[in-house]
Image (cartoon, rainbow, N blue to C red):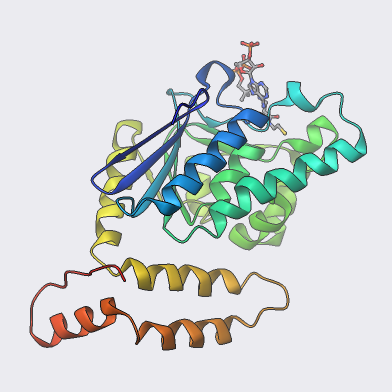
Length: 260
Ligand code: COA
């Protein structure tokens, strides 16, 4: 696959998806969103990839937002389409991805950048990271899920304050807000993501997919998450991974999950 705006590679069962427009602080333009969609769809089918690490190129930014130069002249109709298509092609894809997606936030994560990190299943950050939803300073509101996911992660009051002030919080405050799970030195960020991916990959990826679905169900209007959990729990009993996991435990050996 030939990408111009992202890097996509696989190593040791980790898919590294890196937004690669460092001169524009990795701002998300239409082409980048299309390439990210293509990379995620390819990673979905690639049996070698078990976990995704999503990050930004360069030392300065994860993603500094949607590309402002692309939408400055948009009409309301075009604005609506921008948000709807972006959510469908990228943000919902990431949030509902059947394999774990770890966002490694290596600098500015603003607007669509923070929204992308929030769509990931969890986030870690380097100590130089800065996060915020500055959209109202441009006369617009977050359009890639920010008004929904930020309150879910940090609580309504903090989300309201961040959105209304358009301010940035630093990595330490993001940790205090539970917006990120860990803060590290920049050079330790990807190694930490890899360490976490390694711990994840010791487990049944089939069960993890079902767990992602069940956790996400809690945030879907009209869906009973407990029912989704019961279904996922029950289905697990029909998998080879379940046979292997239980048999390994009972035989006091390490499980080697077949992944089916
Ligand atoms: N869209 C388009 N271009 C962007 C961008 C965005 N969201 N964020 C940064 N860039 C571009 C800048 O225009 C600049 O391009 P240029 O060199 O061709 O002029 C380049 O990236 C570097 O950014 P610059 O502003 O010079 O860096 P800085 O260190 O002075 O400031 C930020 C960094 C993140 C504070 C600043 O770039 C910024 O405020 N970006 C916009 C953030 C935002 O509002 N995002 C939400 C969009 S909905």
